[in-house]
Amino acid sequence: MDLKSTVRPFYDACLTVTPGADPGRVATILGELLADDFRSINAAETKTKAQLIGQVQFFWKLVPDLAWKIDEMLVDGQRVVVRSTATGSPRGEFMGLTLDGSRSFRIMTIDIHTVVEGRIREVHHLEEWATAIRQLKG
Image (cartoon, rainbow, N blue to C red):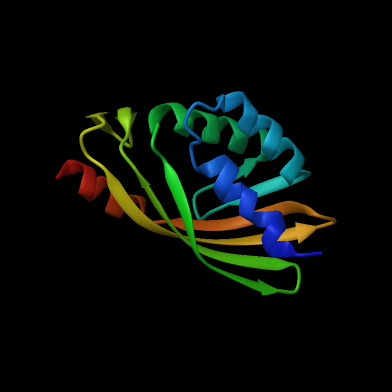
């Protein structure tokens, strides 16, 4: 099994907004891609599969040009480490700011996905949201 091919749609088809696509499509793709007992973990919280799907759908509406570009993928056993760059121009309330889409952010992210039986079971992730806020404030 090619673990990189398993993880890639998480970025290309889910985190990256596809122009003209229905945000409901994201729920279908993530529903198949993520294990039923999936967990999204960072230092502040752990999200379930349903919570992550809801968050991604919300981001599609809030950041209509959101793009998540994979810069590097490394495989170690059942784990896939992804270093990526996220960009976008939010429209609306975003991290305490009210934005109109005229300002954008560019941040680095690091994710460690654990793949079990062809599905992502968990992801530990880190995003530079403090950097995004500084960029969006101008």
